[in-house]
Image (cartoon, rainbow, N blue to C red):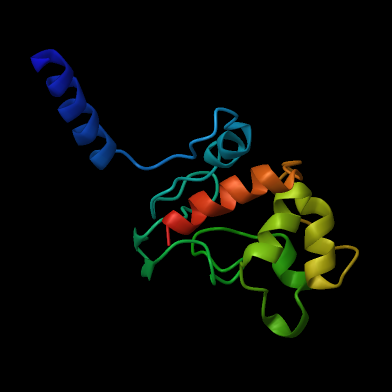
Length: 140
């Protein structure tokens, strides 16, 4: 009994100190994101999505963040954005982007020549998208 209590206490401690991850056994969609993005403010290949100081100001998650505006990155699509203002990330934009970023950037900018460096992730299944979006909301 004492051993079980010790293991439970250790698990609770670890759970409280580790960044939450999606609970599904099929974390393929989540793993596609973490290959290039940190879930903290720290940048990786792509911008970080979490709360904190980026060195260029404080951010809080990805939702309501303007696309193509993270400091320290060069975005291919910004020259195609109408009126110099990009869309803001919300569920609808993220769903289209997760499924096929190459097609989504053309739709979002309204320009068939628009390009993005990010490869299509092909996360088109709504249940997998729901899982990723729910996780992203924990970062905001």
